[in-house]
Length: 470
Image (cartoon, rainbow, N blue to C red; front, top):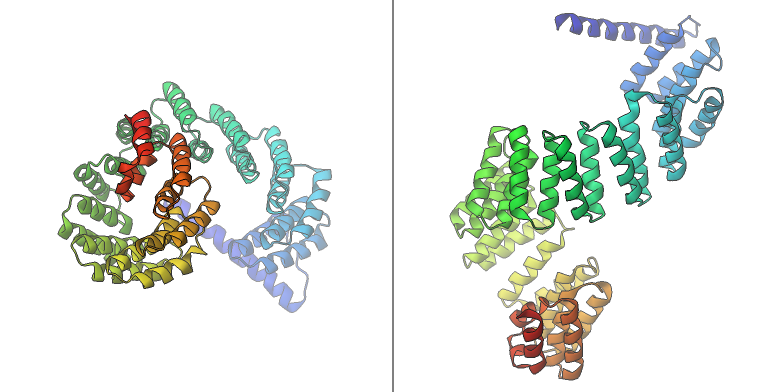
């Protein structure tokens, strides 16, 4: 080990000596001789220290001694690419490609086309590089091709290329995770489950595969299957903390809050708990109605990171549950200061203001932020509800209809409209909409009844419940 270190030091000293000689030459306007390897060392030294203009200067001097040298041209094109001078880099690379289309030339070219958003050209060059067959870069090239397809929103092709790569490199974790991401973004959880099950038949000790399978199960709500897979993953790789966190989240979804806390605490053995972990534990205790413990962990979260907005939210919600809504409001406002782009915080702020009978303040806030988050259906419900509470049924109705134009897929906004139509005296319209909505999403009838209990007397409502939910 000591030997290796001194080698490294010697190399470093060598490079520094060379750089000194080079800089002396420039300042005294002399011309010294450096061979091509020495030029490469000087250029690398400058690049590693982010001194790109000096690196280019060294290349320029290199050309005096070695005109049209391929190595220097490639390094120059790579530096220019890094500096964002893409047109100049392209010119050089095209020249190089004619002489020798090496892997490095093709990969540098591909990265330029990628930056210029010419993804199809980039893929063509990456495939060409892959065909050269140097196994050293193959995994990276497969991944790059997949990422280019993702940039083009061609997730099917990305999936194809990753699966092809994994057949050759089943042990490559990065490829397995990237494939899981592609399945997820494509909402192909069922296919993902099938793929990883099959993969595990051949490679039962691949912990990333167990982990990805568990995540896919969690996504489709098969929580006990997910738990089992996280356990297999951890049996193989016991210090793989993401599996603990997701296992704990699964238990949380199953309302096994005490077990979730235990799993979060198991991670302490592998890494010191960060703010989110304390915050999640706080949430578990909040759900168990153990408010003191919840507050203790939320505060611990803030001790670790004083700008962790979710912990302020947690304390706020807990305070509200303890009947201290005014204090809760102050804490939500602190969370908003830290993360003004998070619409959830405003929802609680509006809710607490309504509880405190400060309805006009709630309205002002809702009115201001709805323009910023027009696709947030919960905000539209809260905003329109303010008018509903005041008996301004037409205003509530026009507000919810605007919201529905922005979120046409939302079932909640459709059902909420039913309540507003009935209160506005438009029973015929309300029943027609209720029928349409019930056909689209029968469970929404429960939410409607919870929000608007009077609906229980409506004959069509009684009939729809009997047919669709009994």
